[in-house]
Image (cartoon, rainbow, N blue to C red; front, side, top):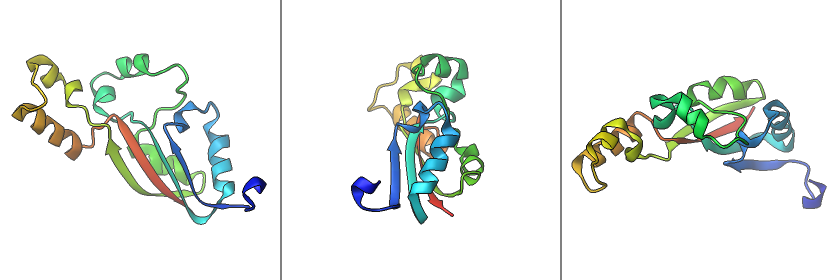
Length: 139
């Protein structure tokens, strides 16, 4: 950080990075130490609550790259992050894929069909995206 001429940052982001750390606790402690109080820590990661995991956690895990060491479920994020000095401000479900829903697979519905559009809306309303963005503040 001395290379930047500062001791702490206003924000730290990790887009599709956090799942690659074997020792998540060490990383979250370090992020906390380099953030100013009230600073923002934002990250995105595959979601353990997305349609792929919900329909088959076994396949979700099997298809996850071997260098993914954590699976984040949005419902557990606040509890985990609080242990490391963060409060969750916002969680956004992203990566919506109607083609991964069993009904779309079975019917073969296409992108411009009503079934596809309704499934996409359902995915967004129920927060079934296969990725998630988590925004939290150092407390």
